[in-house]
Length: 260
Image (cartoon, rainbow, N blue to C red; front, side):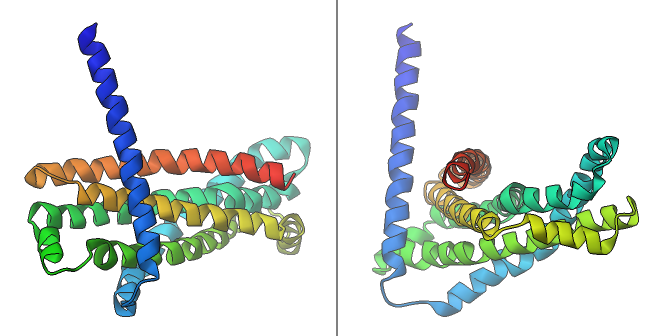
């Protein structure tokens, strides 16, 4: 019994240490964003790695998601002779939920893991300690460029995923279900409002912060050689996934309260 209580206390302590560590890293990162020098070249490099290199996989995920949404909704709506509303369902689902969430999950798996592995390798090989020895701030040089790149590129990728998902639904709606192209686009634009786009973009910004802070924190705290880096990478992806879903649930409820 005592051992169980001891383990529970240790887990609780580790949890609060983790929360405090990630919060301090986030505050330090935001502060360093406004401190010179501004390494714009590194920002562009990270934006290319994080954003441009992710376009193909985001395209595939969003396109097939839009197609599946159209197929699944058609099965039910056709029974009620309401297949014209398929476009509305696909558009709203992509902009409010699936576009931001699926894009964030893809980036967390592809980019977040890469960030943790890269920083973790630098940590165990003492390159980060070498930066401190040279009076260089590791947060400024390693975290800030990735933070800015994610905060800029993830919302852009989300808009891209929204559009591609709607096109995927269009392919099924027009060419399989024989909905008129004009009707499909009219229903889509009649359904959507600015608040739907704003909701998705705001979520994607929050997801970008989550992915960057968790991935960098795990990388900075990796230890134990190659095995430790592997564990930190796995942990960063799992924690990012959980926090993305939890944040999505929270902000979905909040936005439905603000925009009823």
